[in-house]
Amino acid sequence: WASAGYVVAAPAYPLSNSNADGSFIRANGFADAANQPADATFVINQVLERQEALVGGIVDPKRIGASGHSFGGSTTYALGYSRCCRDRRVKAAIPMSACAGVVRDPGGYFRDDATPLLILHGDADTVISYQRAVEAFAAAQPPKFGLTFVGAGHSEPFTGLPAGVQAMALTHGTVDFW
Image (cartoon, rainbow, N blue to C red; front, side, top):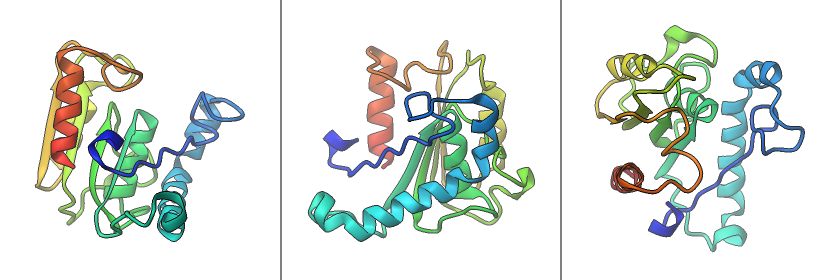
């Protein structure tokens, strides 16, 4: 997305990211679910407040998007569509291999909210069932889009440096959506 001209802030949530200091501790990571949308809002605030020094002032505060994979995708659902944790500055969202309703009040998602949504999920995901993406898509208000990666599991083509047709669909589909 950065190579397409977007400013990308990618926080590593300390209790749910295996690459963050302290490493991923499953019990603590899931317990931290309620805090991650507020952490994301903090990151948005910091980028907006310091954007001149960080990126030369090019961030448009009226065109903020959110995305994440797995638990980060569940945070994206909360940040974009939950009653508890919605940041109204988020104008579009792309959750990947994620489930809605993990962060507080599972019934408080997708209520009277028309924030554009692009759900990405592999139909062979053994970590978070593809059915969770189907359910979120059904509950979401339009405009909404879904991209199913046939035969894909939880991580590929969403993480690392994937290659091939699915990676191209991911890249082009998400950039076109943004």
